[in-house]
Image (tube, rainbow, N blue to C red; front, side, top):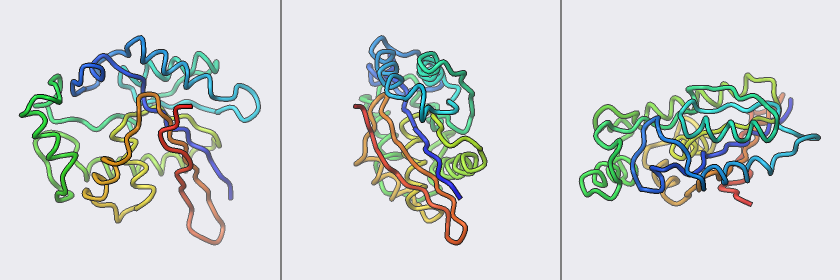
Length: 213
């Protein structure tokens, strides 16, 4: 029996974020994004109660964010593909979200009620992402650390928290509804807990969402 705290951090602002361009794995932080990452890093305790590990998505923007946090805390960063952002359809990567054709694709995937197995082209769809969220939670359960920083991305972070709330019963429509009404800013933090019990079901809780202060 015991409780773990997981500090999920979204990466800082990127050049593509600032321009409204849909991203793949590449793209550095802006100066503002580096400042955001450092401000988040300074909020973690360095002595009593300090995090025990930093695990990051291997994408350029999350690596840069995690390395800023790691430098501030004097900690090395580990990487996991489980924390990567959802793979966007190839048709949208590198294009502005304001482009009418691109907006139509994104609205269909992210802002509509649709079947769980909807797939536009070569993206990670809802079913794929849900499975990866479940794998991440299992990965966290198996780790010995009690205080974990995980640097990740907006869409995948929302999926992880949605899965915590609904579990296997989560549908694409429920996820899209939660996602639309619960934004998370660049370098925003979601703090979650996992408690294992002897005589009842293990418990996930969302304690803080989009914390920037």
